[in-house]
Every structure is written in C-alpha cells, then in structure tokens.
Amino acid sequence: MTTLTTAALVATLLLTAAVLLLLAAVAVEHARRGRRLAREERRRAELTPQVWAALDDDEDGAAALAGLDAAPAALDDLVLDLLPQLRGADRAALGRLLARRGVVTRAAADLSARAPWRRGRAAALLGNAGDPGQTDALTALLTDRAADVRCAAARALGKAGDTRAAGPLLRALARSRRVPAGVVGMALLDLGTPVLPDLRAAVTDPPSPAAQALAADLLGLHGDVEALPLLLGLVADTRRPAAVRGSAATALGRIGVPTATPALGAALAQTAVPALRRAAAEALGRIGDDEAIDLLAARFADGDDAVRAECADALAGAGEEGRARLAAHAWHAGRVGEAARAALSNRPRPRDARLRRAA
Image 1 (cartoon, helix red, strand yellow):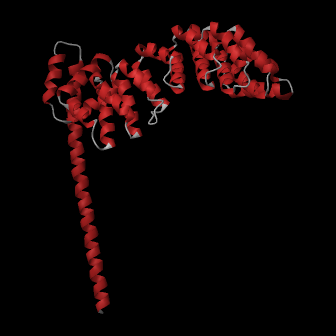
Image 2 (image 1 turned 180 degrees about the horizontal axis):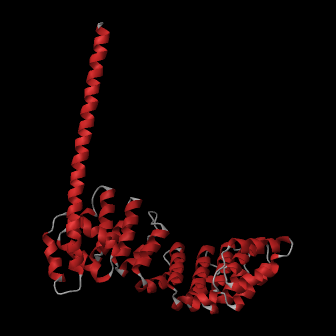
C-alpha cells in the first residue's frame, strides 16, 4: 500500500469519525431539547387550570390569583399567550399578575435597549399586558429609528387602552419616520369609541392629510352619526386632497344616512376627480335609497366609460332595485349593455341594502 493510499484511508476514517461524532452530538441535543420542551408542556398543563380557576368569579379567585405569584417562570409565557384572547376584568387581572412578578418592570427597562428586537419585543409585551402606565414610554418609540419598533409601539398603544395615545398615533403618520396608516388605524380601532372626539378633531384640524383621511375612514367604520356635518363639509371642500374627500365619501356610505345622498351625488358628478367619484358611487350604493339609485342609474346611462363602470358596480351592490336597473340595460347592444352585464355577472346576489340597514 502506497503512502498516498494510506494517507487517504486515514483521512477518510477521521472524516467518518467526525461525522459520526457530529451526528451523535445532534442526536443528544435533539433529545435534550425534546425533554426540555416536554417539561415545559407539563408545566403549562399544570398551570393552565390554575390560571383559569384563579379567574373564576368565586370567593377563592383572588386568593388563587395571588397564589400564582410564586409559580415557576413558565407561568409568564403562559399568561402572555393567554392575554390576547382575553378582555375586560380577566385581562386586567392577568396584567396585574405580570406586574407583581416583575415582568412589566423588566419589559419597561428594555424599551431603551440597544438592540431593536429587544425594544420591539418589550413594546409588544407591554401592549399585551395592557399597562396604561407605559403610554409615555411607548409614545416615545413612535419615532424610533427602526420601523419594526415603531409599528410594535403603535400596536401596543392600541392594546394598552389609554386614549391619550390617539393624538400621538395620528401625528405618527406625518413624520419622516412614520408609522404605516394600516398599523395606526388598527391601533385606533383597538382604542374603541372613546377616541371618537379625537377623530372628529383630526377631521377639522388635522395634523396631516393622511391623518385626516384615516380619521374620516375610522369615523365611518364606527358609524359615527355625530360626525356627519364634518364629513359632509369635507366632501364638498374642493381645497382638500382627493384622497381625503374620497375617505369622507366612503365614511358617509358606511354610516348609511340618506341625508348624505345629495352631497354624494354632487361628488359623483365631479368627473375630473376619479378617486372621489369612485368613492361617491360606492357610498351611494351602500346607502341604497331611492334617490341614490336614481342618481347612479342616471350617471350609468349618460356618463363616460369610467363613470359607467363605477356606477354599475355600485348598482350591483345596492340590492334588488339596483340590479333591476342594470337588468333593464343588460340586453342592449353597445357599451351600456356590456357594462350592465359585466356588473351583474361579477357580483353575487346581495340582500337589499335597506334590509341590511334595518337588520
């Protein structure tokens, strides 16, 4: 056997031994990890009934909850998993439990951590814990250099439930380090109806056009009838950006009050502003009263192709009467008939819009 062959054989044996050692190490680590996860699952299984029992409205509930203070660290992860599923007194009770166990204090300290992932994780934890005492610290993170941290802070402010966060959240839409409108909108929705006065104020005296448009959208989602005069004025104000006026028109459609029909009809006639025209057509379809149907039908028959398509879609979603107006044109030749057939074939048969409002 040559020296070269011997060297190759030795190298192969060493490599094989190294691979076997590596596989053994992986197997040992896998088994160790499996045992650790099994222990954690057993702990969670033992603690979960105790947590639910502590939240029961009986005489022993408060004592049982206090007794969890000495539970192992696995309780913290269990409570943090449960918190998003709870509301009201149960969520507040578990939030107080986390505070007593020092979880909230440690998370608050991590809000100023150097690593962005630690700041974001701390913000998410504080939001789930529902601690309104951290509003100022979380508000400061809305200008954080890391976008993920800013989003985590916005979500946490919504979950924490402190309505003082509404103004800072709306202002976060206009900064150079901004928070996306979708994230801010969900946070404001989490804060609920107590922020309606802040949303009305943002419509009349907005920190930015983006905040004004979002505030109008949210007022519509809440069905805030008190905001009707503000939204009507916004739709009619030609100095406002088209996106803002379109959001106001959409909000009027969601509120669904027929007194908004004339203003929406005027907006529908503004063919030079496609975003507003499209929103007005959809809003009229949502309202679905006789005047709204007449306006849509007239614009469908006499408008240009873009207006016709928007009105056709709105009529198709406006219930039986709107679909009947389209059906009258569906057998015609030309673009009017084509638009009617396309709208009727692309929309499922909805319940009458007025029946939806009455339900």
